[in-house]
Amino acid sequence: MTTYNKGPVRLRGGHIPASTTDQRLLDSDGGADWVHTDPWRVLRIQAEFVEGFGQLAELGPAVAVFGSARTKPDDPMYEAARQISAKLCERGYAVITGGGPGAMEAANRGASECGGVSVGLGIELPHEQGLNEYVDMGINFRYFFVRKTMFVKYSQGYVVMPGGFGTLDELFEALTLAQTGKVTTFPVVLFGSAYWGGLVDWLRDTMLPDGKISEKDLELVHVTDDVDDAVAWFDAVAD
Image 1 (cartoon, one colour):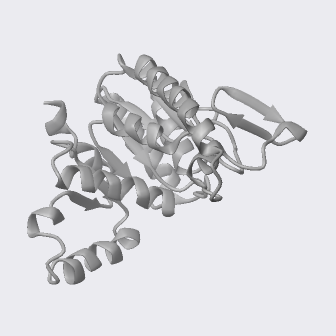
Image 2: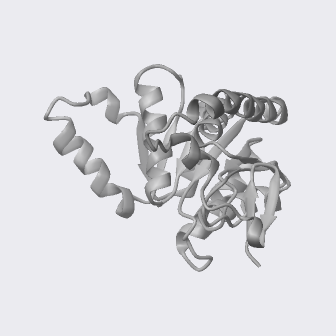
């Protein structure tokens, strides 16, 4: 039976809602009902921030690992994510993921098997799969923007494995915050040159010549295919 996580609440069967909390917040049908409901949502949003801050405040140094939920266990990127997280764990870092399957599971697995802190920040989605079995500390959020705040606030940087729209969303939010100085000393490692090469080429060959970014902005990302190189990128932050 399908299980649906709505914040801290777990639902099944006929109790599963037709839309997510985020969807109801962002959708507008032109009516005025939001005047009566949205102010109360502020309290729920506030509660999610308080829960996240309270749980993660003593986490210590951490690196967030992002990647596709569709990455299979026999994909080389699954093993790479597991190894990267294990090596981060050996350096004293906690590992934070979105808590789902695929590359996220691999990263949580690497940290958990190493004996480190394996964190999963889940989100309410239409096809919710729940937190993977390797998450040792998990929080389920209703709102994407609250969850994103937790990733940035409690991570010293990102390792970005091959992924889809959600992975790109987290990647470019981090780059925007670093570019605008909202976060400082925030390494972003793109793992897999064959996957990310086209994107980096476009940044360098299209955006840069057109004046949309600067040469310095390109230095915000580091592309590698080497697990040790990916992990070493965070050594300076630890020091």
